[in-house]
Image (cartoon, rainbow, N blue to C red; front, side, top):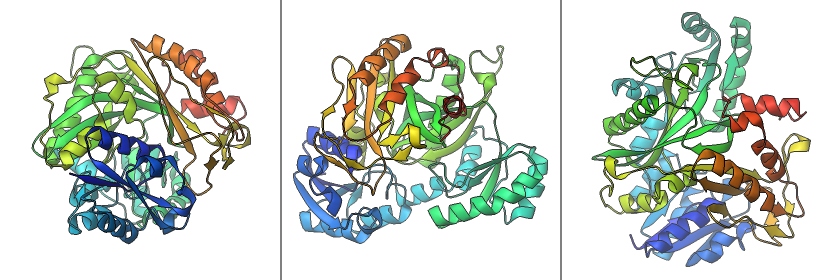
Length: 461
């Protein structure tokens, strides 16, 4: 790999460009009209405008990206996260153009991106799954019949879904009949596929994901991340590792993730995502086999929250992606990977919590980013810049490390106090307030806790 085209924007494009530069790989940035002066375009060795400001006319146009790769002599493409990163058709088009795709193969993306198929693969690998339908259901009557066997409450989920779209929790037959059409229509619009399946809804569950690396021949895990603090099923705060998970449950869950990767011959970085119920948090299984965790899906890309894993393991995940895509085998055996301390990531967005988290594009003035010992801030934001209205509202990821979770939370207070942006509202203040909550310090939360807390403050989202 000599020349890498980064098919993305914002903080992840900046992150990938820096990792490539560390490895001596030259880079090409693509950008829409709105991003002509963005940081990622200036850090890259070359940049190419690929279309108008809306993502549908630029960052989501495969032909424009491949034309830019050809014109600049790129021999590889990194999709980042979001946009085209989990579209099998894009990975196939990159490979057909004779370029290395920094990620798994198109067939792997397709297999693991179909949540119904991924559940069957997980079962074949001996990975626990949430009780549910073995495949998609053909309509609402079949869904009602299946739900009576699974038991309410159930979760309706889009087979081709992601990002929290096409999901409904229903508590009875009337609710299921009402929600089915809504969820299917939402899934059809978002993913081009309205197929739905059902899972038992695990109440008071944690959302925990295991970071994996594979080279097709073998796979390793880099421990897990806690992702339960969510709003509208979108992650807000993430930690490495998950507090309160007993070591025997951690070992069983990470082993299950590696077994799944080996079952499919997984290549590149990815995450295997689990629900963890009350049986597995804050205790053990009484000396028996670990219980209480269930596979839900696999993400076949780098995750927004990957820096927390990097801080506790010392491994550059993006660099490892590039090495694997360049044909190198895994550089680590499982025994080489150790965790040290605790890391927490806070997603700071251009949103106004007082206005139902309405996105706040516009011009910014002064920007102060946190720094100092064991603080990392991944961002594209610069003083006197502009937050465009066309894309995700993420401004920065404030990531801190501590020798333990208590130290990491203390460092979080200092880092979030330092983060200031003038000109637009952000969520930094709300995140700072969150750090001081007793239930956060005690790690006493599940996937619904944050939204409940927001509702008590009058910010239900």
